[in-house]
Amino acid sequence: MTVHELDLAGITDSGLRADYLKSSRLFREIGRGRFLGRYMFPAAKRPYFDVFFSFVCYVDDLVDDVNRSTEVRAQRLDEWERAYLAAVKGETLEVEGPPSGDQETDSALSRALVHMMRTWDLPYDRVPEFIQAQREALTTYEYATYDDLDGFLQSVTLLPATWINGLFEPLSAEAEELCKHTITAFQLLDFIWDVQEDLELGRLYLPVEHLTKFGLDRGDLIREVGSGYTSDAVRELMKFEIERARKHLDAGRSWGRTLHPTSRKFVELDIQTHQAMVTDLVKDDYAFFNKPKKGIGFNSAVMVPRTAAAAARAAKVNRQAERDGYRIRRPYSPDAL
Image (tube, rainbow, N blue to C red):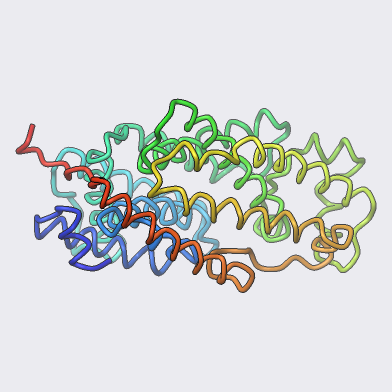
């Protein structure tokens, strides 16, 4: 993020600008290839994009930090929530002793996120609901049924998805439902792609009832995935899971067309990225599961040319939108109320 982008966004308060800049640097560090997506938006919207995705990635990393015990991770979620609630009230977070780097980051990100959500009329009061769902996920190591997994999807995955849909400026009422299909597909594909990594971390996001359907159990997946050999049963299971995800991907494929033109290229590229995941997963009779590899992102070799092309097309779309009178909304200010 640059000070020029903050100027274009109309964010003038020096303390808030520092919070946005810190959040953007955090996003660059932990956002993996997703950070490149910011360049598909008008410069004035990038500060808001950075803060939102920094928040999502930051909380995910708190939950998934295997270098910390479950108890410490739960404590970190509690600390972040306290910082957020203080930011909502406009209060300074009370801490014992000198603030740590974690506490400083919690507070800066929280203040920027509250401002971002108020600016875009998003339900900032529901953020603690998302944190509670993450807290519950900390001690959930498998899901017996798809209905059980759907509870995770609704609260951890789709709740923030509806917020990003608002940032993308939907033009029709159907945008939210299409968003939910698309983001559900993304999450299910991530579960399939990361199945070996998740198992090594003690977690399984494929419903146990699906394994049973193919005569498998958790131990079978632990033994086979990544071993260089996968049985017909495992391949049939993965085919079943991929098809479920693909149906959601197809159902939400028109999401971009229901959004403001300045948001479409990012969404279209994200869909292409996950379609590339499907291609890799099924290639050579599901050989991927013999030796799983790192995920596909905007900065991966297969996507870099498409990312560059999407950014170039987005720049043209954004310039045209501005010529046609498009302007970013005015930032939230309590003085304007």
